[in-house]
Image 1 (cartoon, helix red, strand yellow):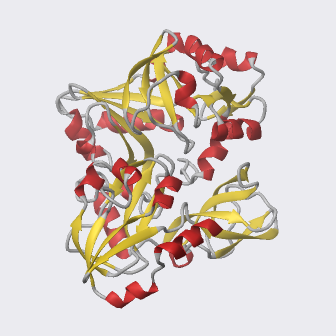
Image 2 (tube, rainbow, N blue to C red):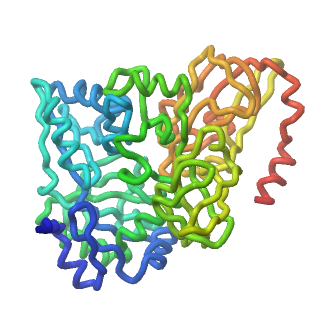
Image 3 (cartoon, rainbow, N blue to C red):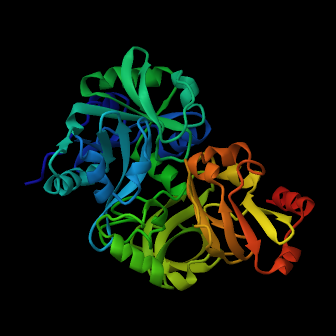
Length: 461
């Protein structure tokens, strides 16, 4: 006998709007209203609204809650202040990803974990079984509704003030009290609005009345895939480790959490395979499970309304996981060419003073990335190799390696860029510099573009 699908508090609103409803993670959810492409384009150009009330909301409270989450989650919870949020992973002993989630910190030792709908019970049981004294883990999912409002005009249409990414505060939308979270899954400016379940329809009606286009799961998938956000159950699973998935930046490996030893080993030895993003070079739409003839398989694939071509993600042998490498996708028995791409090309600068160099990313790079929320810096004393990654920057759109244009020893890390990553957006050539190095091979400077050549290069892109 088939299990009865759950419904969010907004189910009747979706039906009234003519949405096509489908099963998803045990819920009956809207996959589209007018259509995936117009909904996708509305979010990229203006503003769209998604019912994400199926997501799990788990409260972790008490005097030992912070220490408990620091041991359970991969990222550094100790760095999260009141009113802030952090992307993180729940990992198993093998370093596999039980779930990816966002942790929100409130005053007085209170935390909220927003988890994937399909993992709500798994995550709750995982944490509850390990709950220490002085800490209470509680599944509060059914008490709340969650509406994601995303797009370049989202804050303007909602009448909400600007706020840094990965922060949260109480607010109001046309008389409905909401928790305004500056988070999202589309790569666009936006918020996720949480309210009591009984206020859900009033909130939804207010958001649509302000001009947001109702959007379904179909557009949510194409939007997240365009910015290379992984989907749990497809691109990341309990069997895939965080390093191979490119999520090492979300793992604070100098702390102890479940699976940390194994992840440190994988990082040291190098992963056997890596999750890569690719675009199709021939007319075809890749889908999950399609073989990659060079090794591996597609984990996510779709048609990109923005690029107007097929795009996807998949695991390939680490030795070929480089930007520009060609792949062959078996699309229903037909071989179709694809090319590995990076989220953003390297655009790094160097300022030379005698045998030292100050390094950073260009205005073009920070503009393409969007608002930065984290800089994973190298340690002072470490050695950088030319054309190799020495750190990562995380933005509201994507995560990208920072590549060194020169070889040398790190003399200093710009702590302001670590503590206030938005400084890189505001002043990339000044206060937003990243590291200072002593060059090991000053002759490498001869191979760098000058300012005029770089400007011409950008103009050709």
